Structure formats: structure tokens, C-alpha cells
Length: 340
Length: 279
Image 1 (tube, one colour):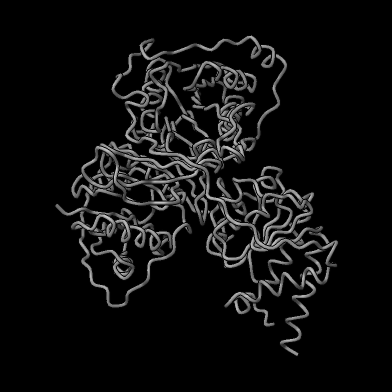
Image 2 (cartoon, rainbow over the protein chains, first blue to last red; image 1 turned 90 degrees about the horizontal axis):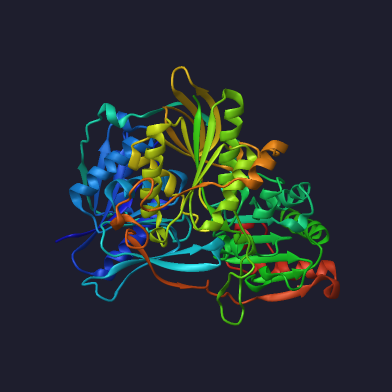
């Protein structure tokens, strides 16, 4: 029997959330780990999404099951849950991965309940592994819990599919293969009145949501050490100078100094920029789990024992209100030197 | 009549959890338990709408007897009735088994006392799964609005609610019929100050206790660890990273410190072009 490793291809307004391409890479690796007639397949729901299905093939989907219908143009919990539940029942995938975005978590929790299987939320590590008394390898879904203080590996032994939501940016994007071949299977799922239990009245563009933390190359984050909301002006000045975006620890968000959209960490966003500057952030575990995969971490803190120093590539013991202005000045001087 | 049912959870305050550096074990001793912060805001929203429309607010929680303190906190905020769902058989439940119990309880309450809104926090800070709200809603076939930041309108005459929810890129305004399940962000409502009568009432408040057999009978096969499709295979502590170089501005001088750091950053291949700075 074919062992199917499924990835939900989340799209909004015809744009695929990049986590889908990360998941196709993960699913490929998991399928290779069982190495037994295992295939990677994508699930795509929307309206006029055939181009996206083709794109999913380039990123590694061998088959894409596509429900392409104007009725499914915008995401709504119930109709999408019904569609995915039907497809799961029809094809019986072994593993089903969904991005841990707001939409993905909304959908995954509903589909798992409706199908009657277990779901592991917000996973950060996935593998197929041997488990005692199980004839075949099972999905070992690992996730942080208790604010990131504990790492737990979760099994779903007797129910199928084994479902997990996966945090964006935890895994790298699958390579795009120009000459990849795959099949697009059109699925038709009739829309019934019982599927419509809510309607979208309007969309509101949210300016704060334009903070693209997850996929930023450079992030400058501020913490409690800023001493107040005004400190973020300095953080932003440095971020602007480096072409980066502003991040924050949970403490500042809880204190109301900056919006939640900027929060990095277990209850905020996971990021993996090339450069992460942590200014006045002590480095609580819940923050570290969200940024420790950055390529280069520069920590600035007055406290020489700040836990953030344990994971930083380079740490400066000093007052951020002195260090950052000096840094901005030196960067500007370097830029001027190259133009002059 | 407006009737909000809020499902809450008492959780360890994860901001206060520490790891024993010697044994790598979680130090649970002395960690305070609190009402899950998102749930507190869900209760606040329920109370806010009760003050506008009349009616009542019921709180349910599944947990150990100690969770009574969180129920009292909700009563203090202005809730009217608290139910503790507590039995040994419920222990070890994952989100699937938890949503089974809560859905049965919600159903039983709704039959006697129809529910307008079923509120949850968006997630609990100990597990962070955000799965129980949607799970209960699906079991009861209710509309569900997750990550809600605002309840715009509760129309008692026509029986609908208009909710604003936040997604990655925008906010969506959603209209749905009663009862609708809503999982709440903190923006949904400010925590109210307790009125003196509510405060006094809450101090002596003894919630009802529902068990696995009474007043409703649950299917034992769906409870607790036994009823959970997922199990914990193993646990550990996050892997440790190694600390890099530490320089001190007071020793090295400010300019030299900053120069050392920038040199190292710009020395990373490709970094200079990302930052738009050439050495």
C-alpha cells in the first residue's frame, strides 16, 4: 500500500504561505526515512489555484489533490474542515503536516477532531522512528512545552493520519526543481448548506501585520532593558540602518510598549534571520526558543550574566543606550566611506 | 437571554518555571498556578457583554480541585456560576480527550440554559496548542472564530454575533449564528476591576463539582490518558548552545567594542551585502 505523506498547501489570495515549501522538504525527508513506497503529496484548496498546484510540484509534491472552486476562495473553518476531512477519509494518508500559522492551527485542530485522530501542535522537530510494539515507524513529533522549558516528543500510535502543525521557519525551504514532474488531481466536493455556518463581512488591512518578522534577514529586538516604550525608537533606528525589522521580547509586549506582532518567542514568532541583535533582552527560555536558530546573534546587555549570552555568537556587556548609538554612527561612517 | 459560557484553565505560570542546572529537571516546586491569561480576557469579554445586555456568565474548567481558585477569580471579575469538572479519570487527557469532556458539559448546560457565546482563550500558556476551542466547536458542530480580537455586535433579536479575528496578514470580520465558539486574544477586552460585592461574593464562592458520573455520565473509553490518541514518548530539556565571545564596553572602550562586533558581523560571508555595508 502506498504510504502517503501529506502537506497542506496554505494559500491566501493566490499566494502560498512559504511554510508549505518548508513542509514539502520535511515530508520528503520523512518519506525517505520509511523508504517503503512512500510518496509526498500536497493538498490545495482555493479558487483559481492551478498555478499554485504546479508550483507545489516544483517544490517536491509528487501529486497535488486540488479543490478549485469559487466557493472556497476565502478560508473559512467549516467548509475547509469538511473538504480536508473528506480527502483524508478517501486517501487515508499516514502523516499530515500543516503549517502552524493562524489559519493552519485553526484548520488542523478542527480536521483532527473531525477525522478522530491525534494532533501535535507547533512542532519543531520531526522524524520517523522505531517505537516498541509498533510494526512500522511512527512519526516522532517534538515540540516545546511549558513556555519552552521542556521539549516533548509526542506519538499518535493507533490513529491515522498522524497529524502535526509545524512552526514556520523551523525548517529550511525545499529546493525548487524546475523540471519536477507530478500529477494534479482535481477533486470535486459539493458545497452544501450545512457547510456554511459563518460568513466573512469584510477584510481589514492590518498595518501591524505587515511586520514580516518570520522571513526577515535582519532583526533588531528590544527587551525589558529598554526601560520604556520610547526605547523602541532607537531599536527602529538601528533596524532601519541595517535594512531590518523590529522585534521584541514578551515582557515589552505584556507591558504594552509594543504590539504583539513584533513578539519573538514561544508565544510569538519563530525567526531565523542572518543577523539577530538582542538589546536589553535577558534571554528567558521562551524568547530563546524563538530565535536561537539565527545565523549570527549579537547580544547587548548590562548584566554580564544575562542568559542570552549563553547562546549569542557575540555578546557586548554594556549600556544599550551607549552601544547602539555608537553602532549606528559607525555603520553610517562605513556607508559614507563606500559612497565617497 | 444572553448567556456566555467561558471555558478556562488553571496553568503553571510558565514565566516562573526554571530548570535545575544540575539535574536538568523542571523545578515545579514553588511555581505559582494562575488563571491562563488569555482565558482571563475571554471572561472579561463575557462580563462586558453581560453588563451591556443583561443575562449571565457561566465558567467551566476541567482540572484538579485546586482550580477552584481560578473559578473564584472569574466570579470576582463578574461571572455568575462556576463549574469544576474534576475526577481522577480525566487525568492525562490530551486535547482530543479534553475536548470530548468539555463538549459533553457544554451540551448539558446548553440543553437547560441555551448558550449565546462559547468563549475560550486562544491557547493555554502551558501547552500552547490552541486546539481545545476548535475541538469542542467541531464536536458540537458550532461555528468557530479563532484568534478573535473584538466582538463587534451581539444581536439578541436576530441571534448572531459579529466578531473580528486576526490572521497573519489582515483582520477578518465574521458573522455567525448563536451559539458561536470564539477563542480570544488579549485584545478582546480589558480585565475589569472587581466590584466590592463581586469580590466579597467570590471569597466564599463554592463552585459546583461535576464528576465522571454525575450529573452527566461520560464514556470511560474516551477519558483521560486512555481516551487520548496522542501520548508523550519522551521529554527532555532544550539543547544547549555554546556561548560565543563576550566583550565588555567598560574594559575595551565603547568605540572599540562596537568596532570589534561590527568587524565580526561583517566578516560573515554574504553579510555585508545583506546589511548594505561594505568593509
